[in-house]
Image (cartoon, rainbow, N blue to C red; front, side, top):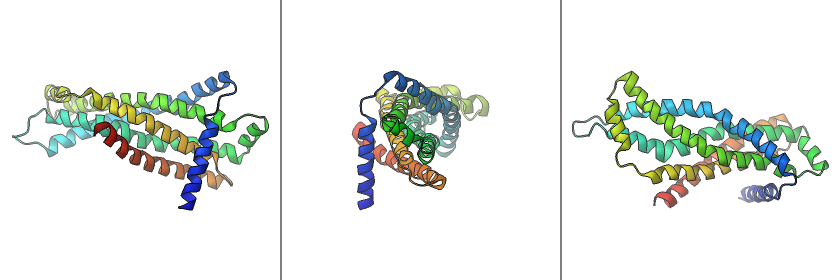
Length: 247
């Protein structure tokens, strides 16, 4: 318990340094653009690929498992849409990104710490926490909702692909189910949750990487701890946010 409180205190103190006023805005903007490309744009491919196949698999599974003469044919499209909007494209996709992006952030900052690059920045009078961490947080908070939107569309395209290529049902029935009783708020719920998840991924991973003590072995351990902690916090916050937004 004491160790957990100590870690929480160190995290809050680090975030206090991170969100201090930037010293040179041009330098931060340049770093921000770099982080958007490295953390956000480079993740578009894997998000589209995973979402496409998950959308296709969900459609096939729903069609096979709830097929009944008492069930309308468009139910498959309706259930697929709800799964993609309410849980997969926001929560599950952010868990996947915690593994990809979170480990990237933790290992990058951890390597800088053990090679004394962060110490060099401190000696030069630069607020290393703000310079290194703040652009990552801002980049992810801005770009992950975009990835969530891409994930929704890719999942629905994957669902239609099972109709066009697999022939498991007609695209007309799937389209009717996707449009049936559509609630726009569900899309906004996913986007709102993704803002919180993005902050958790960036800040927690940066904390574990920035506070590494030791050598290269500790960098690997910090990367693992960052992914595990981010994933647990995402699941916990998902429970709370779903209750607040949908309750």
